[in-house]
Length: 640
Image (cartoon, rainbow, N blue to C red; front, side):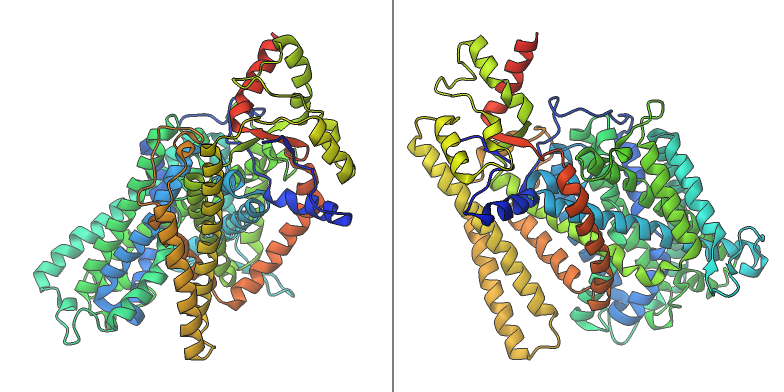
């Protein structure tokens, strides 16, 4: 096994330069350790209770106050409760994957951070860039949705105070929303005060929202028992749209569970991440699922599903029983739900910016941490002002579909990352070339002993730098190898196992892509669709079976920070997670993907002209994991 420089090339002539450019896409960073901590750290102040508040607040938006009416009327009928359960289980698959990676890699950045460690820089950039889009548009859309709900307390939008009311700019036809912008700026100021202060505000607002939902469940349940649950006494039964309608409803309400991933973005600010992160993620998702199901069960039981008002299903259901005053309580719940969802959208964004800036993919300006509040102050201000400006000038409701791309892409790559960690965890770690340059001196002072292997030779990192010819590099590798002299049979078997596992994971993803693409291709002939779907299904099934038979890597138990939560039922659970999220990604529609492609193209250009050449791994040299700690330890001894 030899030392590999990130800039080293494989190929002939111009192919070497091409490979160097491609190599930047697959370079992977090390799990944050004491050797990699060069930046200021965020304040570790969050407990499991704080994480539950953040997760529930970010997940339960105003959608539940509207969505259940639309889905019950058009897709599921009374079976909406089962649709919510299925969607909750599907979201739980992603939650399991997030819980494991959050424990192993408890740093800011969430899915971007995990993808960079497990898959590579290129995919990580796309995930991070998509998450930025999601949080920006999501925050702006939520803020815009608060204004009409808030107006109900004033008797309509025309009665709102002038400084909060929407206005149309003359000559431009643009409807500005100062209330939405002001709310985002308030949230931004709150986040700048500190993570504990903002999490406390999130918990208070979420408590009010949950209280309103409990009011709906308890009072609505009383009315239901009193009236005999007329919504369930229907001639067409519990499944008026059939099982297909129930599953179609699940696909729609699945997006109501998006938000629990905000918990993982605060991993670096948790007191005990190995214990509290799994508790926070799982408890938040469980609470949301139970509340959704109970509210839906009550509402579709009070009023027949075909009589539900698609815009205000809960308020109209209570009004039909003579409780018009309940509209104010329900509206309070909707406003607090929107505000907590707004907090959940703005909170992760500066932390993703900070993580990308730490890795050199964005300017270092975004990685600065305020010494007093210990939050990424500059990133928070910039992202808050940008989201407020967008909410002020632009109605982003037509772009709402773009929000789902970032989340679904993150869910998919997180599941793939779990498979990689279990079967082919990275066995090389990047160290600065300057650190390896001192190996010669270290060997001289230590008598040539680094670690347990006595047959290690120093390496001249200059021979690997970009600009050297392939022939010269080959000679340098032959003259200065860092190599294990004896390769045992067990090591050869392990190498073969890793190669088989890596190819199987690749074929698993290909099979899923074929199946989901064929299943979504309604425009194609039926026989062709079934044939292609069947072929992809065979590839998918065989890949899962092979992975189930392959032994997982023993080193996966100690990869990253050990001792935390482990995702169960690997490879079946992550494979199902990849399948579900890939299908939902493809099913978003052509219009959504055309809009997203513009944003992704901008991201690709920024990466090519800035991120790729400023990456912290630009001149990194990869060494076997077994020697990395020894090199750091030897350098520390030498310096001392």
